[in-house]
Amino acid sequence: MQLDKINPNANALTMNTRHGRFSVLFSYGTPVAYRLSGVTYIPTRDREPYQRSVTTAKHVNTWHRTYDNENAPTQVEPAEWTRALNEQREPRALGERTDLSAIIRRGQELTEAEVESLVGLLTGRCSPRTTYSVRSALLSVPHTPSFGIFSRVHLDGEGGASYCAGQSYPDEIRTVRDCLLGARG
Image (cartoon, rainbow, N blue to C red):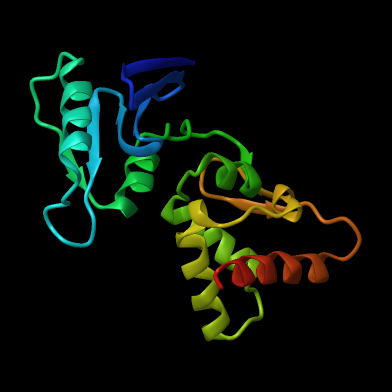
């Protein structure tokens, strides 16, 4: 990790991650832009274009010019910051065995086959409405809080899912389902 002083009121914090070099520019202590794997992201606000102060704009331009980048900075909405970072996540290896907790922790997506297998596992005798809700929750699994019981839901890497029960299989499956649905809000 390295802190670079751009000028008295602007600093860049840079670190190496498994996704590449990551850097955040702070202007007057506020993060105003970031750079990941060679792409600079400058957020906009609800109104276009985002009117930042002249000094902050100078900070961003100076910081951006310190990189050898022929491309212009990309402007994105604040919500896109997280999405841009998520897109840089490494995919799981084909056939990698894992559990639901690890997938959530890494922010990874489930495959269509895994979603269908999990829906079958978790909604065996449920109503169509509950089945639909569970499927919807599984499609947004990277944004779901992780619960300890999720580490018992295993994915075989080929689209199959299983559950390692402790005391009562039906009760634990219901708990997993309730945690998924409760996390959706």
